[in-house]
Image (cartoon, rainbow, N blue to C red; front, side, top):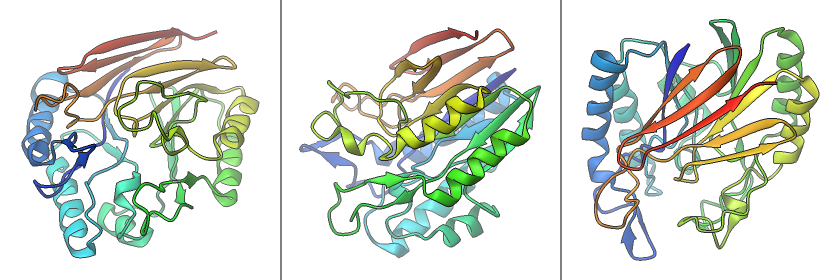
Length: 274
């Protein structure tokens, strides 16, 4: 089975995406890079499906502007000739509500699961519990109790090996060397990640977890489960105006998983299942 991940598109005004005085997210390139991604998927890669791990937009704390860019990004992905499964990210939720995004995406819920090719796939959402509308750095997020209960029940109801997607990192990682989160690793990781991992581990069915948000490529194994992080489409990863132009090809079978990050900051990970 082959599917592809795109994430952290950060479509937004051309003067946004700055951090530490650097336009680290090349927001003005997002539209063109998504269009190129769609063309590549349709003509060359032809995956069985695409997963978008969230951060459709680079929010500017203006509901009208954020809504316009969110709709635009959804529309940019529409020409894909294969199913698209989208998650939300922290930048999507500052001014947009869950109901806003569900309506635009035509989703009943922002967390869900589906089966494909002998595997079960789970897309998790989150709730912002930090004061991110006032303090832009306070992006503390959690999976609340109702979704944790749903996750437990969903895993209990499947007999298939399972892959989990989530925007925030679930592994315990120090994030040393990360441009965005080295000084505040608590915001690069889900706050109650231990509670989520406990459910994943107890099921005995979860084979891998894939997330974005941190804007780099990473693999960490905890209690037998590999946690992969893949980089943003628009990250100015060398601080020289070159975007990563990243998408991730995932090859999966009963023996293992390969993560192949394409673009200007490529890497590969491979993990054999027990």
